[in-house]
Image (tube, rainbow, N blue to C red; front, side, top):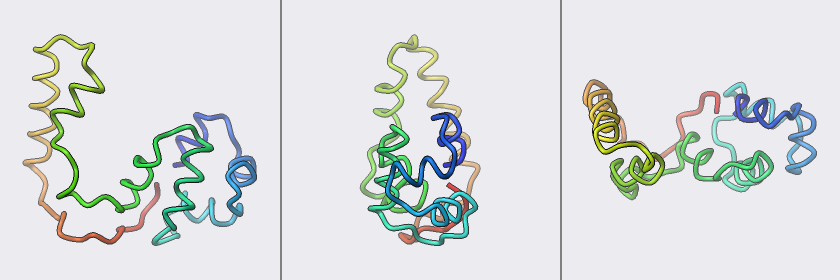
Length: 115
């Protein structure tokens, strides 16, 4: 979240004031000390930063992997301007990375850590 805040050109105080969240909470979320920020808090921050709230909610662990669509439609929507061979290359890279990692999607609770 810190990267998004900085890209938006906001200080922690400015983000806190604009989103209606206290500065200490914003700071704890950025440092990963806030184990489970409320969905409403993350949604307010996302709106202030001009990002899709699902991005922050997913990063905090609120997304249930079984309800998410496959990655292919996302790639084709987000990067549809790329030639088909490059889309296939992106898909293969992500599939390889995912296959190399253990599947720990059984937990539905946020894991904490910096957003």
